[in-house]
Image (cartoon, rainbow, N blue to C red; front, side, top):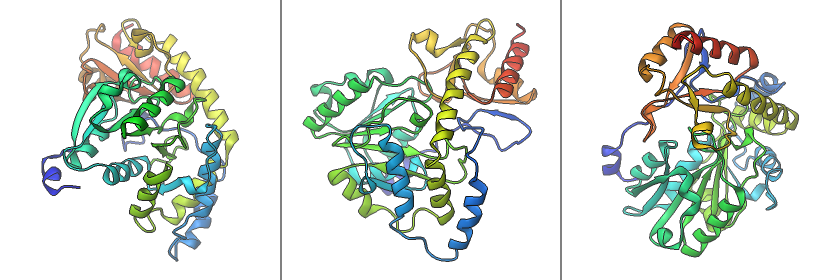
Length: 356
């Protein structure tokens, strides 16, 4: 990380509210948690009186088994690098890959931290439309040190075709370009993972799927030199004992994951079909099928400014995300997919605010 680059960098705005009196639709976090989480955390407190095992065998085994179910590559413990959240996996990857002046291709609109992490390393950011990332050809990759894909993409919610993404990985290998795939929300879907693909680093977040964003647990999956660099550069004891124990517990609860996926798919469709007049889901505008646990809404036809709509919803007890902070979006809000009762309240408030 370059000190002069840090001086020029800025923080990235995110969703999320600390007000527990509000229905939380501004952050894409599962409203439910696996059974036994509290007990697993309390048991881990006894282990917190000593340094954790820096090899994190139980956590890495659970993570490998979890990801292995979503890929045909054969993921094992040695492919997993534990990190305090998916963003930490991204930072480590950028820091161990990039040098000042390197070109990094990032999607837009998408998660703002990709460009920020590249900036912090003194790299040059090249933004391309998020749905065009998989179409990058040999010429576009010729001088790119890294390409980033968000799958499914935040905030649009659509996933890449797996075969197209795999073909991109092959072209990146030929060009000597590292492909980084952020799969923070892939666990909410039945989409396959690119984990284990040679030349690819996958970043995974536990805390969104398992409803524990304050726990800070995640991991990277990589092979070859990229994995070796990540393992060497990883901070010693970078995952606390409670986070490692709870993370392993959650990753083993496959029934919870399956139930979450079913609920998200059902409720996402129900939200889209129940939107007030004038509000258009990105899925319909772009004619793409969204799969993520959130929906991007275009409110340009409602006659309401985004900031006013966000404030009006908040006054009625519902927090939604102002999505104009994403590059290229100027009339959008993003809403999380939550429980049926909460989603009913969201639709009711939107209709009331918009007078429909």
